[in-house]
Length: 260
Image 1: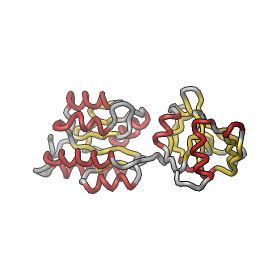
Image 2: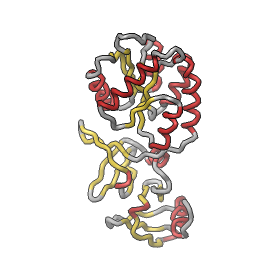
Image 3: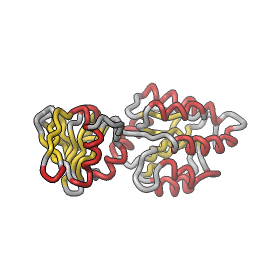
Image 4: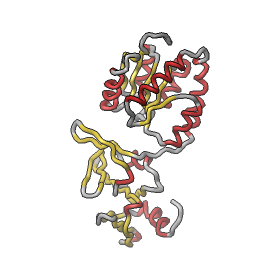
C-alpha cells in the first residue's frame, strides 16, 4: 500500500445508496482521498478489494447477507486499512479504541471524517502496520460478544430519509412484507420484517406480543385481560393492540414484575 503523498485509494462499502452517496460527496472534499470504487454488499466488497487493491476501505458493519464482520474474515490476509462505518452504541465502540482502529459513527460530519483519514494515513506509515491484521480479527471476536440494539430506525419518504429514535416509537405493526412504525398520530412504512426488527430492538424495551405487533414498554398505559388468556395492551396514545396465545408469557412476566 502506498503511504506516501499520493491520494489514498478508497473503496466505499454500504448497502444503502443514500449513505454511499453522502460519503462519496464528503470524500470529494478530501484531496488526500480518491474514491476508486463502491460496493453495495459484502460479496461485492470482497470482489472489489481483490480487483482494485484499495489503500483504504470504508466498511459498513451492518449489511444483510455478508456483513462487515464476514467481509473482514473473507479477506483476512488481503485487508487494506479499514475505517468502520457503524451505528453501534458507545459500549461496543470502546472495543474499536482498544484495538487502535477507527470508526465513523452514523451520522458523522466532515471534521470527524477528516480525523479518521488522518489517523489512517498515519497508521499506514508505520512499519508494523501489516501486523495489525491479527488485532483486527481479535476485535471482531470481541464485538460478536457484545449485544447491540438499534437506537434509531431509518424512515424514508420519497428521496428523503431521516433517523427515527426508537424511544419515541409507540408500536410496530406488520404490513405484509413491510412494517408500519407508529409514532404518535403518524405511521411510517419501512422495508423490514417483524422478525428482523425483533432481533435488533432491545427486548427489555420492546415486547413482541403477537406475530404482527411489537410494543414499546414505556408507552404502555394499561393491560387488560381478553378472551382465552390473551390481553389487550392499551398505549398512552389510546391505541389498542391485542396479544396472541404464543406471546402471552411475555405479558404475564411483565404483569408479575419479572425481569424480561
